[in-house]
Length: 318
Ligand SMILES: [Mn+2]
Picture 1 (cartoon, rainbow, N blue to C red):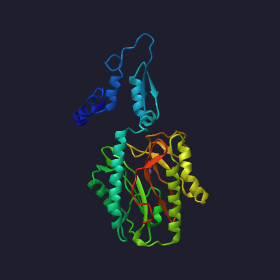
Picture 2 (picture 1 turned 180 degrees about the horizontal axis):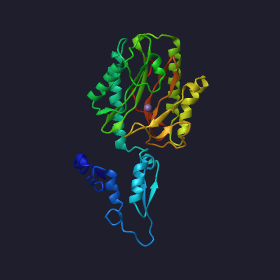
Picture 3 (picture 1 turned 60 degrees about the horizontal axis):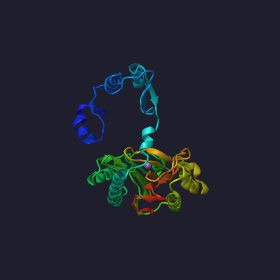
Picture 4 (picture 1 turned 180 degrees about the vertical axis):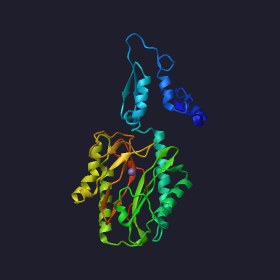
């Protein structure tokens, strides 16, 4: 493992017993990596007669400039791109990882429970995002797992509407999508509420119920052995049959863990087979431009015969 001087002490502690060698890298990390690719330096074994040396790298992370530098240094070693290798290794969570994800999910649930009763007309979206992130940190999060989305009124139709200065008005739909990082692991969470206690129109309730039905259909159908595409269809079908398929354009969910977006996905393009121990979000939504949007998101873990919903927050329209 290579790291710079700032992390040496921590790395030494954390690598104890892991079998990894630790080395401080120079300010330019790839230069050190290049040195390590020299045959006979103790890291790369001396080549036996006609033996081919190969070095794998994450093709979806190494940038072209560094690849070029390494190819020049790695004479006689074949560089082999392996996209998704680590992503695949990370897709099934260990019991310890699962415990940390559950912790992050419960911090987010608890924070939401403290924040939603404070949401009222006159606050800005940014103020709501700040309250949410503040409560998560008070509950032990080291930070937010991504920039908190608070999108209200017509802005709620933006699937990734970063919180802005819009003032909340009574009757607005408000979508809050955020998460916590606890001991390095992420949670992800979305709830949609109506600001100020009264619906502006019945359609808000109708579409909310439709999104919730799509989520519930997914929660009761997810299980090991189906593909990410089939998992996606569990929820998408409900929205399509009601005629809103073209207003739900993102995938139904994604895995998460050390990063907020991991593999596999629940999407029409995912042929990965779901397996016990995978953690996934289930987040159907409907977004009507100019009118508003609704999304509901929980985190689940695939079990032996189905899935377990880790998110505990209320799901009736509040
Ligand atoms: Mn998500």
